[in-house]
Figure 1 (cartoon, rainbow, N blue to C red):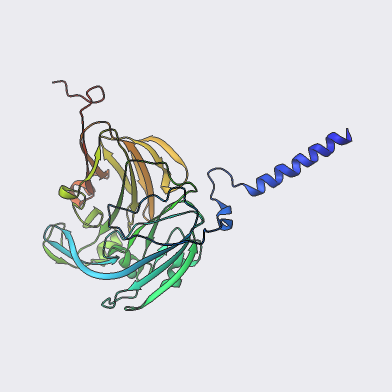
Figure 2: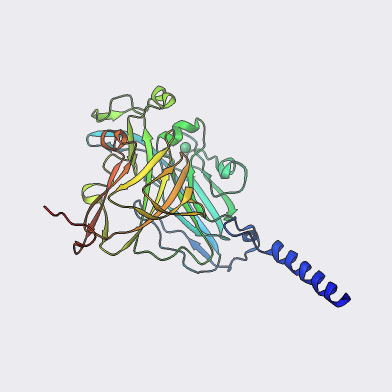
Length: 343
Ligand SMILES: [Cu+2]
């Protein structure tokens, strides 16, 4: 009897130790802080949306250097409409950052010498004051550097948080950072980077010429434009997304706001899997998914039939009147058992 009690007590101690060592399934990996890096250093490749760096795979954690530059430059917002964008690395959204849990990220933020404003960066993937904003306030022509350890896997928004914050976000200063779980995300055939945001201009939608930022429209949450990837029709015509029949597609979709929640939908498709709010929980068989301002989502689906699939914010005036519309073109063999026009 005494022996049995001893065994049971030992088992209890072991169970307790086990509990303390392993994170609950679906919870953030608190052990990430203990993950040793391999000692290697990689400099993150700079890509432009809708493209992104290749998957991290099952590599060990390492040090990753990320170089971003805050710039202020005129660009096209719609056909014949220009705007003075504030950016990270001259694209809207900014460079996609791709690391794995346990990585040490060394972020270098330069502010271009011809900038007028100071800028900084708040990454939602950071555990620390201001998400890095306090550590990276940088005047024109200067550079700030800070380090952080990627503790929580998921898809996160980053944005400038210099005063006035709403204006820096409204002008284009945002992007996504993906922290892959240990072992990486499951393999898919195509991956794309899409980010929704609003623009507030003095002129009406499609009014030609250089447009100024309209603070009143911003405060009233009445955007002149709601777009994907920084421009009306950024994902149309020669910039359509592409896939082949039978391929699996993963979209990393962010919403910079600064005001609206997106009802993200792909016309003619059902999301086989949705990483809800970009976190670790997966929902299946979803038609439309919500993306909060300052949030993101990962959606995955297989394309079964050739044709054009339209990406929209299903708050549908935004899509057809304000620009929140894009296209995925699928090529390949027709599949009449799945979709067929009879007459
Ligand atoms: Cu800024």
